[in-house]
Length: 257
Image (cartoon, rainbow, N blue to C red):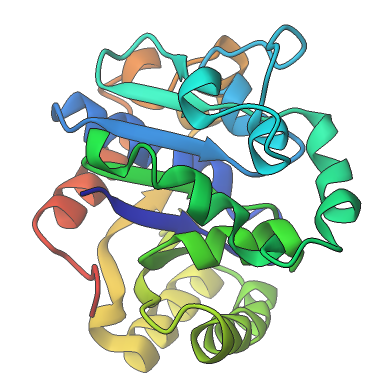
């Protein structure tokens, strides 16, 4: 049965999609069957794995509306153990079209049940907002991985995200846990980065992953080639950081604590 991890942060630009793509790729490279679910209408996770979002016939949008099954919609990637449930801008309409459905919060969970036995891990890339799509992702997940940029405003937004997670736990998914906090875009030469990192580790303790994702040019370049970092440049510091994160996840790491 798959472990389902939602990669979520209500603040944009914190490395959320980069984390979803590269964690999924790293788990797959370790020969664990992995499905990446793109729940962001921007569909950057899909394009980051080489899926042309303008050419897919069905997407997660059709799955949520009951117009297609997950099995019909899954796309293969260049990594043998990695599949993707793609997205495109049509997903924006799901917010409105699902609003009157009784099961609107659990549409993704219900549909993923058909494939949970087929994968070791299902990683969900959430949109950078509190929306019905995010709620669906959190209801489907066992745990939440929170990418956190090492800057002051990111710390402010973390409190709002934790409150959202608590509400989902209380009302919709009592089994949901915080998998861990991943520090991203870290620059060791920057005093503020080091201070934020220190404060986060002091406050959240072992909820913070040991792996830290640095600012890395190769990591930023990889999506434009439709590749995860380990395929674009496995020796880069960004690729190495996500492989280290995958090792922590596979070893139990912060998962489910």
